[in-house]
Length: 459
Image (tube, rainbow, N blue to C red):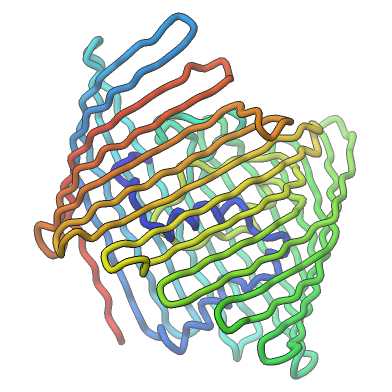
């Protein structure tokens, strides 16, 4: 994604981290359709639509270091970008969407050549859930940047793009006043260009939930997932027991279970993998802040996750989502966002570490992600924003970094009119790698003029 869209706020940085670490009890979590239904009482008939369009000019200086020496290149560019999003709700139906894109033309001064870079990122979700109707269903679409084992890139628009279409339905039965049985099926199909393979997945699940008291719920979830990608057929069976409690200032969830996967190869051979799975989550919410800590252990692959993991609605997806084969992953995630740290500032940060063991190649990798952001409202019309992100991959040894990338973005914004603003951005990227590709340093100075709109109506 072009860095003109680089500042999305602390909540978005945290959401980007959460995308890769959905709890193994994902089927037992409140489905998006149910979440929408819970807001019916407060958001009934609310329609919101907002967006923006930008024109920008930039100067990019790149330094490439390899065994043969260091090369430098400075390129001017001009481009346009924009985004549109909103939400619509009526009765039991709710639609949320957010899409954005950019087009940038760059001129290589030494050769005189011209290069066009474009990217589109976004997602949409439609959910239907009526408490009086036992049937619910959902539809979804997303466009995201993905990477396999090719490592990080300085320019996020160079990642491959994957589109995903999902859909599912559920049937709720009430065998007792305190007990609910939900039978559901969820399917997903992904496709894209470059190194992205098409993939399909279907998951069928049954969730038996019982209310233990006014704030606590216990549930038993069983599921079977089928997926196919690159001539590999994978079947995953999972069962998990979950306890969920709503607290005065947050929430606590814990679950434990087992998963087993059968992989069938093109030559008709097959392998079996199994793992003890579980998760623990604790969140704290208060006036203007939210903190969460979670641990997840799960057996999954990216194709199966297509039908299971519905990311939250937020402005833009992270630079890239890692495409994985069948792995057992252990991850720890910490996020915090605070809008009341001081009268003029807001902060947010996220930390994640994960160990992934491939069940197909028997290799172990470590992945790390960190992000932080700070916003300062200097005056009613001026604002300073700073954002930092770090991603790293390591091999068998947790401290042996194979590749890592640092991004540091700063921006000054001046409000010119109600929906018009001017910004000066300075973006820095540092790529360090032990792979057979050069290290890179990139510095981008960008001037951006943006005009937006925002509509909301109560009907």
